[in-house]
Image (tube, rainbow, N blue to C red; front, side):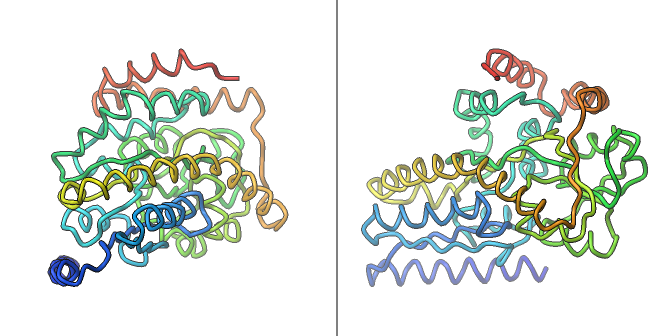
Length: 336
């Protein structure tokens, strides 16, 4: 009740501010909330959008970026967007499952994208657009897909064989697919807000987790995880979304300018994702607190064999036709 009351009060305050802004011709304010650090690809992408949006609209729009769950945690932010307490988010694609758009959980399937080229064919093509259309009746407009790269596994014990996961408490986002993935490995999935993971790892509430290196590094998880495996088993991406009513209510010229700013910010964020992950991995190796392990060819094949049944198990949830369409796209991709 306290959270809902806070949201309602915030929305009411926002309406009052909007009315005042209209009379005083003050800038249109876009509150852009996210849960990761400013130094991550997403954090830098948000700042780039702020810079471009304010520049292209000549001050008509002011973008306020709130990183590191300053306003809302994982489970709260989508409700906040729908209620109008914030205007823009960039949640991970797994977040839409609990909202009723289960198709987005297809991005969580292990080893579904053989390479970055295959991924881009999906997000920038008809499939990506079709998925965004499923958010419209939730009061949400999808603007762009932002990349954060492929994930590695970490724990306070070596993770070389799939048997090493047995009985481990592994933190995941709220996703039935990720739950099934961890159970396929013999682990015990634990749903937890991103902002709570460091302390949970530090205190032993959970034994390990999965993240792209940039998230692991900027949240200092390498300080409380003694081992990590460069598995690239899964993908983590985001959808930049806005409150539909807010977006549709913008002056047409302003919306066009913001669209242009978003396209450029998206290109920037996606281009730096791999570079940021590479830098983060090198920094964690240099820190010397985590031992990083590269899977052998046979070990990687064993991991794939253990996790690929999740595709069939989750097909009815994410959509058999969608899964087949993505497979067609990825099979046609030219992966090196």
